[in-house]
Amino acid sequence: MPVLRPTPENLDRAAAALRAGGVVAIPTETVYGLAANAFDARAVARIFEIKRRPTFDPLIVHVLDEAMLARVVACVPPAARALIERFWPGPLTLVLRKQPSVPELVTSGLPTVAVRMPSHPVARSILERTGTPLAAPSANLFGRLSPTRAEHVERALGHHIDFILDGGPAEFGLESTIVTLKPAPAVLRPGSITIEEIEQVTGPLPAEQSDANHPVMPGGLPQHYAPATPIRLVRAETVPSAERERAGFIALSQRAEGYAQARQLSNRGDLREAAARLFETLHELDDLGLERIDVEPLPERGLGIAIMDRLRRASNVEF
Ligand code: TXA
Ligand code: MG
Image 1 (tube, rainbow, N blue to C red):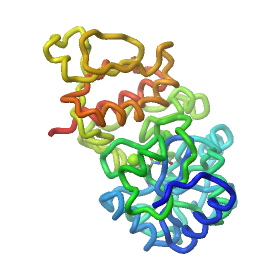
Image 2: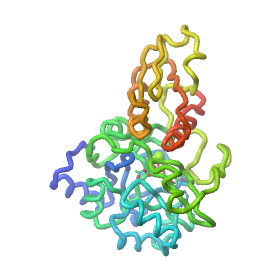
Image 3: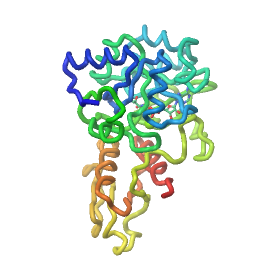
Image 4: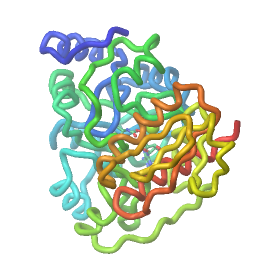
């Protein structure tokens, strides 16, 4: 479980562990991932075990290049090709028809596979050295906060993993945007690429098709991304001062008096900066033993849509 700096020797060690069926936490530009050889069903089974993830929730497969993509997906329709040209390598995941050789466990028995080409140099270097596509969900316990730093992975899963590669804080800090193409392009999970950016390529997309109780994708559960401390989405002005004393407060740029701890995600009100700081701020306040964390709703435009998606799921958890 050692945390390794991504030196050439350490990258080789991690790649050798992956080739031998091991599980390694790797940095990506979105969040840290828990990686295993996508074609090794036993190694992939360890991911589910370590994360305590139900096997009905399929994984994302990471590829280095087009050659690796062709080993994973059976075909790339024109709409997918256009999205690939525009957004890969980067935080876009596409759901495409899978190759028969991709284990059923990776896709939870679905005929499709979720695939993306990461841009993070350490993730790319590991893919190159391992020479195989890597199945990698976020490196957290199922349902908990996603990790944006190596320390987050170490604390949550350190005992169970062969290596954690430290690539510094994640650039985007929010998971990839997941897009399906069949029967028509649609966003299954809002993420680091905004819906407007996707629409510049695909044309107008349907409004969200799922409600919280009927997820359009297997992992789209209404309760997810939760810290141990209860989260409440609320306007601070409506919270009585007595309730603030043992609570934390998170907002985009607004300030509020009387809270035990208060954090602004971006003083400039910049949603990109806010997205990058969201999970690390939740991790930080979660460790302080507060009674509750009040979060001021963010504007639901651009990246605010994905941020509010994560916050709603985090605040749905009953304690
Ligand atoms: O940014 C990311 O996407 C990160 C980094 C590590 O790449 N990964 C990530 O993986 O967020 P994970 O496992 O936490 O979320 C993957 C989601 C799951 O909710 C799953 O339901 C959905 O992708 N998914 C996977 N395969 C699918 C498929 N064939 N069809 C529909 N949804 C799928
Ligand atoms: Mg996840």
